[in-house]
Image 1: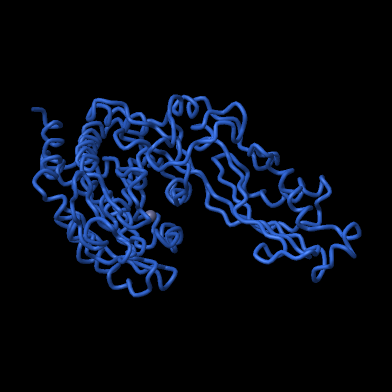
Image 2 (image 1 turned 90 degrees about the vertical axis):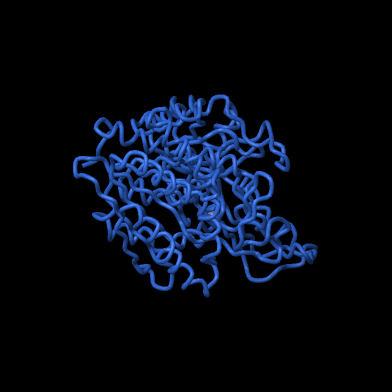
Amino acid sequence: MSGREAAIAAAQAHFDSGAFVRDLARRVAFRTASQDDVSGPALQAYLADEIGPTLAALGFTFSIHPNPEGRYGPFLVATRHEADELPTVLMYGHGDVIRGQDGSWTQGAGPWTVVQDGERLYGRGTADNKGQHGINIAALAQVLAARGRLGFNVKWLVETGEETGSPGLATFCEAHRADLAADVLIASDGPRQQRDRATVFLGSRGVANFELTLKLREGAHHSGNWGGLLRNPGTVLANAIASMVDGQGRILVDGLRPPPIPANVRAALAGLSFGGDAGDPAVDAHWGEPGLTPAERVIAWNTLEVLAMVTGNPDFPVNAIPPTAKATMHLRFVVGTDVARLRQAVLAHLAARGFGAIEVSEPVVMAATRLDPDDAWVRFTLASIERSTGRAPVLLPNLGGSLPNDVFADLLGLPTVWVPHSYAACCQHAPNEHLLAPVAREALGLMAGLFWDLGEQAATLPRRR
Ligand SMILES: [Zn+2]
């Protein structure tokens, strides 16, 4: 058996021995629900008593820092430095979880106790994110044990506020740029594209929410006396929205459309299908931008949605012309969309069509990121995982959903490679959250293979400094 094979086997034996699940159970028992104000001590303890000491045993030095935005949870930074000439990998995880929803679990033994039932490991945070960063820490440990050193430097950043929108993460990273300097980010969160296929994703779509408001007058007016004399704001707003996105979901505002899909993004998505699992809604075949595949529509294109819309009182309609109408709009967008000019683009579009009276709010934005699929770190990761699992992983240029990857990609300037260890039906924000045992076992092996190869190929991997 080669050293590489031995490290992978040891990582899987770590699962088979029950040691991985024991570690996971200890971590899940910390009630780190960041949405609950009483969780402060648990968030601190998770870093100080669990993750910090675990990493210290692997030769890391660690420090815990208060959140620069005050009342939110702390950050852990840990470093294991082998040599200046070696590449440095930044790893990321979040120790907080969403609320336990203790009364609503129908499987396992509630949120704070790990119970295995068949292939499922139930417990809050097993999938999001304690199980995932736990797999990566354990895989590092196995490679370190097998080789005696890693052959690269590692830094860990663990935050405890991800489930409340990562407050302070950008400010913290800005202030600790030097401590967090690295050559690449390798992290695990979110689902695989299909449960049985390893997946690599390189960023995420962004989100911009904004409101359209049309207030024409004070108070409603009787439709018999005033209908035909007064403009109806509901009618006007509905037509304005129809001018922005048509009845098939195609975006009609030039400034909200993405640039053409790059050829290597299109190639990565060829043959991928989304949905189709039990409980999934049926995909609408002719929705969205014409000429695109469903995979291109959800990953490589923008969507403009109406999240909510109101005029009058829908629960108690009266025969009157309402005075106002309002809609909350929602853009999911890919890299290359000029979201900084979103409001101007929408205002200009509406004004040109006679809808200039509609107010457009400043959008609330989370940025889009996407590493080039041909980046050398991507090629390295794909090749390593294929070698370990015998099958090419799915490459998603970005997730359809959103995560604060811009902090790593834009603020810290890192190539970002994500290797998720969960799957879409893991109930990560619901009762009965679980990690799949076979996926966890495979993930331990493929991460050990990845870390093994990183040490082996350290001299040839791209460097930032
Ligand atoms: Zn989450």
